[in-house]
Structure formats: C-alpha cells, structure tokens
Image (cartoon, rainbow, N blue to C red; front, side, top):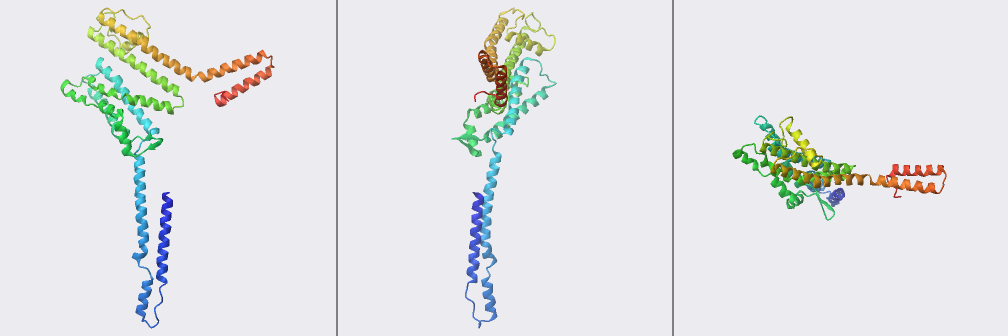
Length: 367
C-alpha cells in the first residue's frame, strides 16, 4: 500500500508539471512588430522557472521523506520488540533460569556449609551481583518489550507492551526479587547469604522456561521429566543442607547420627538425604528429640512429595509410550484373530508388513 501510494503521488506530480508546461507554451505568439527584447522576454516567460518546475518535485520529495521516516520509525519499533517464541528470547530465558537456579542452590549451601570463606568472598560476591545484573536487565529491558496477544492479534507497540508487563503480577515479583537487602551487609557483614532469599521470588521465570521448551521441543516428555527431576534434586539438596545444619548445631561427630566430619561434607550429607527421602533405610538411629523430628519430616517428605514426583515421571513416560503400546496391542489382537480364521501365513505376513509400514510412516493407526 505504501509503494502504491508513492507511485500515485509521483504520477500526479508528473501530470501537474506537464499541464503547467503545456499551458505556458500555448500562450499566443507576440506580434512581429515587437522588438527582439520583448520576444526574448516572451520566450523566457514560456520556459517555466526552476522554482516553478521543481515545486512538484520538492513536494513529492517532502512526502516521500515523511513516509520514509515513518517507515524507519516503525521498523525501529518492531526491532525493539521481543518475540516470545524467538530463539533470542528463549536463549535469554535460559540464562535467566540458570541465574535463578544458582540462587536456589547456592543460598542454602553457603548458609549451612563452610564454603564461603574470607579468601573467596570476593568471588562469591562477584557471582551474586552478576546474577543480580541479569535479573535487572530482564526486568528493565526484556520483559517490557515482549509482544503479546490481544483479541487474536499481536501487539507490538512498545508503549502497550510496557503497560501490559506493569499490570502483571510478574512485575511486582521481579521488583521484590531485587530487594536491596544486601545493603545490610554493611551492618551484619557479608557472611549472611540468607539476605539474598528474595532472589527466589523469580520462580515464574523458571516455570516460563520449561513451558516454552515444552512447546518448542520435539520431545516435550524429556522436558517434563527434566523439570520433575529438578524438583527432586532441589528437595534432596535442601534436606542435605538441613542435615548438616542440625549436625553443626549438635556438634560434628558428637554421636552416631550426626555427620562425623570425615570426607567431603556436602557429598556425605547429600547421600544421607537421598537415603532418607527415598526410604532406603539403614540410617543411624536418632538419639534425641531434634533428630527424631528431623527424621520424621524427612520420611514424610519422602513418602508424600517424592511419591508424587515419581508418579508424575511414571505418567509422563506412560503418556509418551501410550501410542506405541496401543499399536502393539492392536497388531497382536489382529494377528491373533487372523490365526483363528486359519488364514495362510503369506497373508499374515502381508498384514504384519502393512502394520509396520503404517507405523513407520505415520506413527499412528487412526487412518
């Protein structure tokens, strides 16, 4: 439409210019008695001045310039918008999710285990604030530019996308996740990783990451299993951190139940947490009320939470293989029925060949 409008305007300008020149040349000739000077003046008058002949061209150029600037502005606006299904956004969402998982695992780890020391505190703080920078870039520059659907149409105006983001709960969660509680380091010192707990409020980015991959992945069942396994590993990680914290509170190697202080502390506690959560057994017997409460909570988590998560994995795998299971069942029933009819083996082979070919080509027998 823009090109057609430009061509129409150009053609109209040429027609107007031609008509003006034609009108000038159709003026009556001057008498022969007039001197040569008026004749020269009439000839010069017949030739359109440069200012007159270029008026249409100038107007056309002004119009084209305005249209070009509008098109350029529209192009720049569209470039500033982030498509929610683009590879760029999914890559960025992966980076945000890794930052979120870093905070999820590192905050309880540094709170309980002695892995943060004065020698490596600068490294930990550099990692922390790098993750905070990713959070800030996501909230300030990426999320306000994401296109969205409204009444079946994509909205790509950056003003509208910004308003849409601000109206969402995600915006307030993102603000809370960047609460500057780290300033309390100036009073309590940098050995308080629990002050970074608000960073865990950005869980909606974690869910959005798996939802996007579930839609675009050729094997969505693998994505669902990976999400469930992430939940399981995180629960075991929290249990391991809690076990070490209880051991430190009661004294390392103070009895047979607590951590004895030998080997790698995290690996030993993680192994204990796996055995407790999965109810494998053969764990040391608790010796006081706090230990009994911890083991009771761990067993309940293993019985209920892990049972639910393992059941989800079973359902995901069953759904992924359901079509193939139905295909094998239908083929076995068909061949069994044909054998009861005493059909020749050659016909049975042809039926088996048809089943195999149809499954390889379509992965379904609905047709």
